[in-house]
Image 1: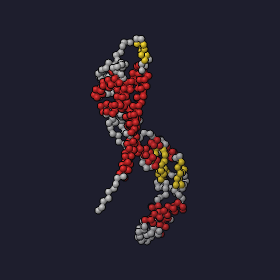
Image 2: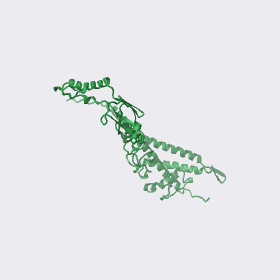
Image 3: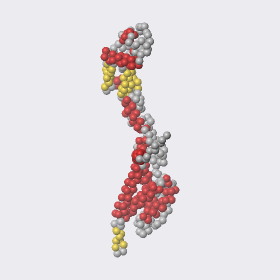
Image 4: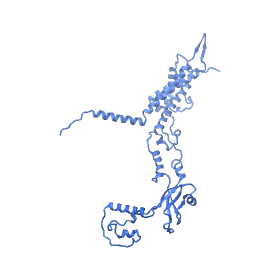
Length: 386
């Protein structure tokens, strides 16, 4: 194998010098690549000793360090805001965008509870009608669904089999006292009679008591209108009698198609949307937009990567023969230092990101407000004499 040139102290960055070319279009990256390479080489001992790396090795480490920095920062941003991001379009980059927290996914979750409670949600409530048969108390709603052309399974959500509300049998509260002959006759079906009427406004609590009395009368003295629904098997009470076609033989109810409720995809959650942390639209950072604090971290991580590469190269041979002796290479020390430095830098960056999280900042502001109140409590209060 011919001798491969190693670092000679100078380099000139050109487009294509890095494996991926992520930052070739960034003028700041191109101008600083050679400076970082020179700095890393000198930190590794050049020119006192040879550094068995090329300029491309330093460029590669520089590119990887920036990419790792962006990866850590954007992973933090995703963890911080994923609940607000999920379901948004992947069409535009989130780089340099302020992510506004929202309750979209929490509301979507609450709507599923609203569906079961019959108070909103995203599942359609359909209205059905069952023809009652005189003397028949039990009805299979699955048979009804099949006969109605419904291919999916259904779930009955509400049955409208109730006694007429008391208010429809309570006459005008202005007409008499509401306890006259008219009310009594209505109970026995003679409400069409017209007794003498006087007009007297009764207090509202009297109306409430009267409605309660009518409902208690129906519950105790009459057959209760009720139903029992188990596994889509409907049993109604009392047993239907005296049915008239088109008048009182239709039982109304609400139902849902269970496949709509059980579907994990909403009609609004289709297309190129954020579905996991790996398709959140963050791109590699622009090196020119990283501040000086971030650039220091990038340079230090570049040095750690360069040290790691140099260790692997020097590890090919444990010793190098020289005239009259052997030189032991420092591969083990370089590799240990490189790995510890990389780990320390990543830990430092993650701690910094955690300290500026939304939760940490709110806690800090809360503590500042508490301390400010304690400080102001010690300030003397001025007494004004008018």
